[in-house]
Length: 375
Image (cartoon, rainbow, N blue to C red; front, side, top):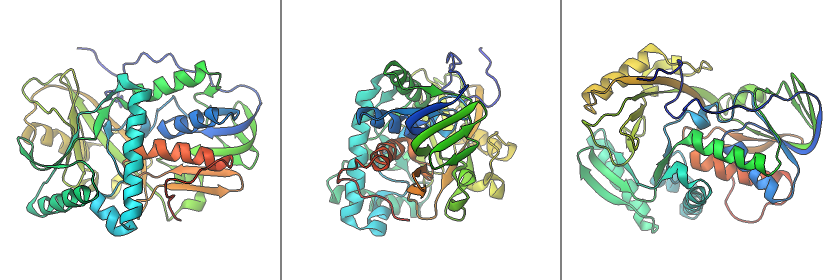
């Protein structure tokens, strides 16, 4: 069986040839810092708006949470729909949920080879959570969104047929390749050492630009101390197995309020994450490495709850940022410097929307539409 380097996500086939680091100075209209899903979405939007742009990343394309997450494509924000209705009001919550459904369809059109629309299950870990699932179901149905009660081998909860799964790293690499073909310069292993109005300084050179978009999730508050107290970074941990024919999970599962999540890949492998809340204060960290406490809990859950006997082949971690409200960050944090991120663990769909939105905001082309988050 093929062996993988430590802390390699199951999505990585180790075939990416890599991109060069920036060497020398550049001048452009917009510099996008971060080549994950949201940064690549912003670059595509800028291109469609006729704007000149350059993208950089401190690591490889999707080297952070964008290419190291559980591969879930869920409509809505981090909070379940009925909670969003209570927090935001029905009209606003419905507009945002509809926007995520439209973004899911856009993602399927853009990268169909990376995405499977199989629906998702939210499965209750307790009677209290099951009652909450029913409230979730009722709120979705009241606003005309697809959802069904579910009682099956995984447990009791709800089925949301509009959701899906994907290979997050493959999608980002496909988006990056498309941008390169269209002439957008992208640079890997090019950290932003200084971000200011009109310039981004890196180890190999400076990028002079009219505007800057920083599309970073985990560690966003380290880049912008202005966000300290509103944004906090946590570590999410996962593992994956060899093909496991002894089990069958046709749909991805969100379990115990979403703290545990798993899916079975087309080749039978299991990708499982969770137990951040049971890792204690140690999981609020900037160390993106698997840790024994949470990995032990994941392995026990894999064997005892899921009944998987297959060998564990991958263990990895990623950093994501949270806000107390569940609202992602989207704002001008410094003059002509915009930041997006802090998706509270659910940035695969929302991050793509925020990338498009921030591109339009930054260049003054935003049309009326999705209600934006408030500070």
